[in-house]
Length: 178
Image (cartoon, rainbow, N blue to C red; front, side, top):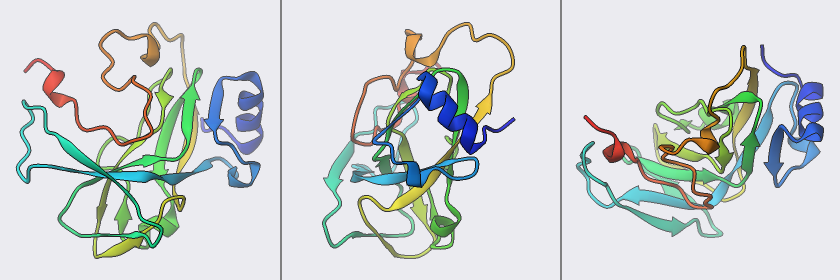
């Protein structure tokens, strides 16, 4: 079950959903619009290795925007910091973003109950497109959890993305044992 706008507001009042900065005008019928933060990143190496720590270079989106190029994976970040203590958050692209040929996540659209951070975006594009800090980039929807949660994400000792940040975070796949 997806939360409606009224239920999202109730959960914000209760503190089980936190969105900062929050603006009521970005609340949709059953979602909340999030915006592109001012930082992007790209990997330093063209060939990535799942067993290695692949380093990234951060850069700030200039006032005049930044042109994304096809064939490059960009890591972006949401302007909004979120906390979700009783629901499963999903981040999806806005239709207006998709119609510009922008994908905001390759596979990581689902958050975990207890996720408390900004969202790193895995951005790719179908053709060159100029993006701007603060532009609407996606929408959060919230699903009800069936059953009791044993361990919240922010309480897991092995959670790889718990450090609060305003910049995109690179893959931590290399921390897995395989």
